[in-house]
Image 1 (cartoon, rainbow, N blue to C red):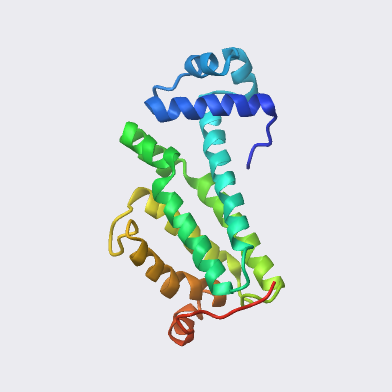
Image 2: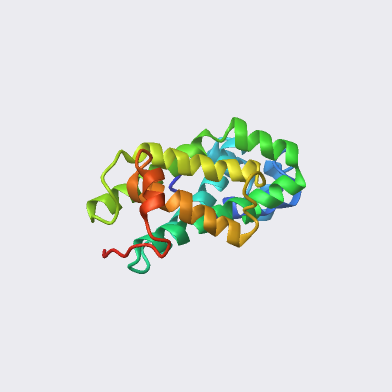
Length: 214
């Protein structure tokens, strides 16, 4: 569950984020974070019950910020296919370029990978819930088809999580052209028509996309 914090919590998380990016998870101590935040260790422990909870709160806050931007991008314009494509490309780009992901892996790859795999359940679950809500809004206003949104949300959330850990494979997502082609042929039909109909819809939908109104 996402933590609802106050200004002091934000100050602590800001200091923790800076320290994580500098030295990694294990070497970022509460004492270091306390010094950087100008607060004492007891205050941090009282608010977060330890370093593990603090780190999870920092990561979840960054995910929340990314999802807020996803919502903004997804609400711009009137062409539904273009909205979906822009949103998906933003998420895929963030999954391989966000400093909390890339720099943490560079500073301390073993512990970062352990954290994002062993303790990645909350991140994936939060993303699934957010995507489900977005898909339900699209279904309510008639811009995407009626289908069970949870399988689609799960596929999209796990795709982003997979890119975080293994960015290269069949598609080179560092290449904007390859990423855009993948999104147009795989993600857009999936979001518009659901998992069962997505493959057939990909063959039928014109490359230019179809327009809808919100």
